Length: 87
Image (cartoon, rainbow, N blue to C red; front, top):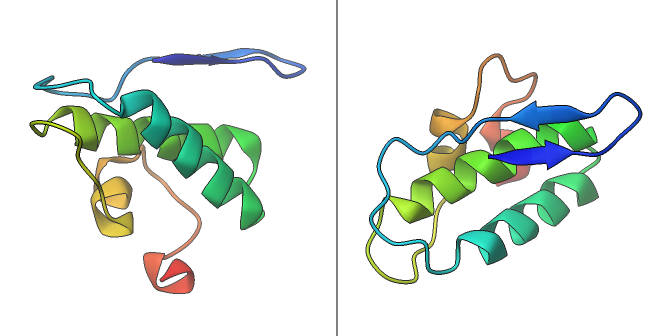
């Protein structure tokens, strides 16, 4: 999980269903957050997507990667965009 420190503050529980290996999870969070923020998404949504990306990679063994589609499948719903815009 993570805590977003903005005007309201927002605590977000983890989205991981299974944890196999945490290697690279923090790097995944930061990379995903920055990538979606660069696309102009609101901070809270960027964090939700970053948490979803981390949930994907911790479910894999070793240093793992994820795809936009894997992240969107794991992300909280509803999302107000489609992955085709970002590929």
